[in-house]
Length: 104
Image 1: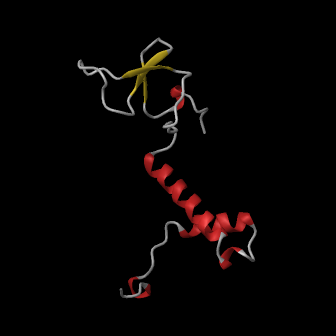
Image 2: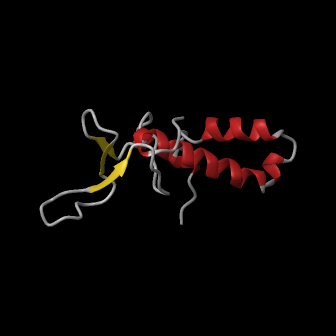
């Protein structure tokens, strides 16, 4: 993972040869269509790693949430924390057979 500064964020658009650029996280702020400017070493709370895709980021968050939920259930009792994470990774992409889904 990159250091959490603008330079490593997927929303940062650097100006060529400069130590600053535009933050493209939100719509343009100026009436002329300009974006907010930031230094490459600035940071904010909405930083997103530019080395991974939004889909990969979403999958990581789903695994994290699934593992946290598993830790509070009986499923986690016999397993080590690493085992719970592995179970979450194994299960996050699986889909139940339609015959396994109860009618609601």
